[in-house]
Image (tube, rainbow, N blue to C red; front, side, top):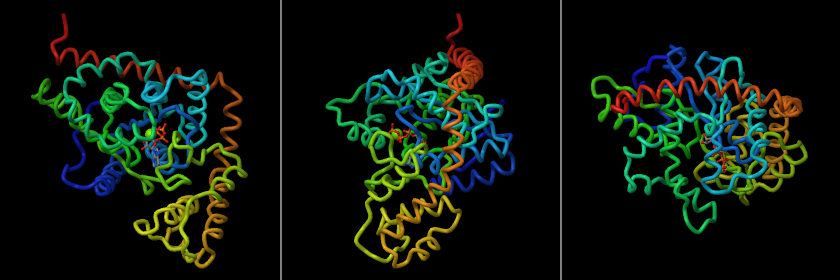
Length: 357
Ligand code: ATP
Ligand code: MG
């Protein structure tokens, strides 16, 4: 695929950029390639579904080429590779297939298997400073959450690795949650600096845009970002009873009347939004429906809406995990395709950097 030019002016905000990008994608889906991914640190949750997975499926169905990366090296930024890694990775493939990512049209792969992608990390590290990496708010936050006493160098540099994940395939749209915006900004910086230094005549890498959803930062049951590693997530594959129990324990506030006020009442607004995302209604309408029903009424509504929305995904996933061999085949076909793209890019990068002897 040729490298399309940057699609959005750089002075607009994240939400405006996403709206602008949506229009450009609808007008010309074939001009876009999406890359996004997840750490295989546990089963995917509803934050993933509404923050990014639903967008991936939508882009795929619009005709955008979609690559989905299982960021297995990112698991060792704050933990050791567990014996369950293979099962976790295949479970993630099952999650992808269950939500509608189609292996005939989209490419799923784990980045540890794509050597040429990883090699891009070396030149990219030369394009950023230690001071820039030290300022990254998402890395700081994740380090604080990890509870570790010192930061592993791989955690410090993983946003640069992420730039390699995105740029190796010349992706120009990255459907992600809000926590990823600082990383995307760094990827854009790396692309720009690479072009200035090694390809001044015509930009070799495009500067990719983030595509945010209507739920760019879904909160977990404790009122902080829903994350696999915070123990506050509602997994897509949870049972209906577990979903009910998790939502019953979700943090709310003492006001009886339910309203949708994300700034003043973030935890209540988050539950309202969750129900609205499941039913396709407007959050204000959902809040009005609960009205004086209080947190109990809201939680019952959210539980029913979520269990309803997730039922087909759960049924599909339960079937998929029975065939581990098939999940492995999906991954290995995706790996072949990703390798082919990465080797081409690395050859071109070597040529631009005069590393050809
Ligand atoms: P971990 O705790 O292991 O970091 P995580 O739950 O944060 O896991 P990631 O694998 O780091 O999940 O994130 C994968 C993708 O899902 C990213 O694009 C991220 O922005 C998005 N995402 C994760 N959590 C949320 C959330 N709570 N709301 C919206 N998007 C999210
Ligand atoms: Mg994360």
